[in-house]
Length: 136
Image (tube, rainbow, N blue to C red):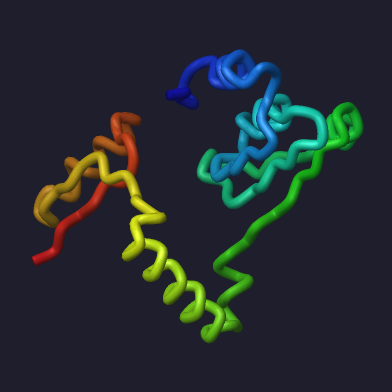
C-alpha cells in the first residue's frame, strides 16, 4: 500500500518501474504536481475534486515533457440533467455487485450515534477503504 501522507510519488515510481498510466486525483492542491510526476509517458491524470482545498494550476510544460493528459471528470454536473443515465448506470453497477465483480472495501463500521468517531478516523487518516455509518 502507498499512503499519500508520505513519499508516495517516489514509492509509486519505484513499485511500477517508472510511473503509472492513470492517476485519479480527488485532492488537487499541492498533490497535483506530484500526481503529474507519478505518470509514465503518455499517462493521464483524471481530476475529480479538490479535497485539498485549493485548485491547482497546470504548468503546460509538464504536459509536454512526457506527453501526458489532464482530464476533468465532474460526474455530478454531468449526470444532473441526465436522470435516465444515472438509473442505467446504477442498474449496471447493481448487476456487477451481485456478480461479485465490484467489492467495495469496508474498513470500518460505526452506528450512527458514533458518527464523530467515524469522522475522527477519517480525519486522522486511519481509514482503509470505506467508513460506513449504520442507520437503524
